[in-house]
Amino acid sequence: MSDDDLLLLAELAKGVTVDRVGRRLDVSGRTVRRRLRGICDRIGVATAIEAVAWAARRRLI
Image 1 (cartoon, rainbow, N blue to C red):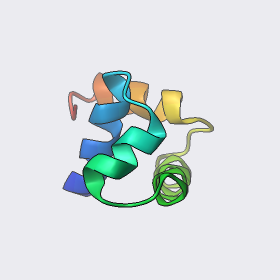
Image 2: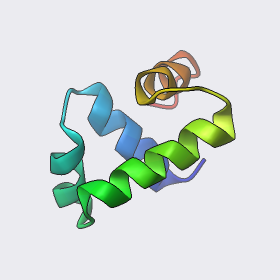
Image 3: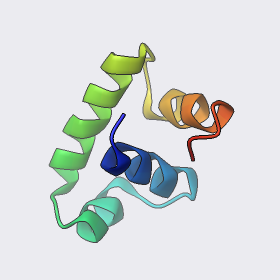
């Protein structure tokens, strides 16, 4: 998992909206959603919330 992926998940864990994460990363909200879907597919979870929990349990964020 890349540093950008972990940054994205960390921002979501703080409660930042997808659109605001996109603005912080200088990408669109749609790109953030697409990247989230890719992260979820890679780690085998169904939702962004599960991805955040997965990363938190592994102390990545």
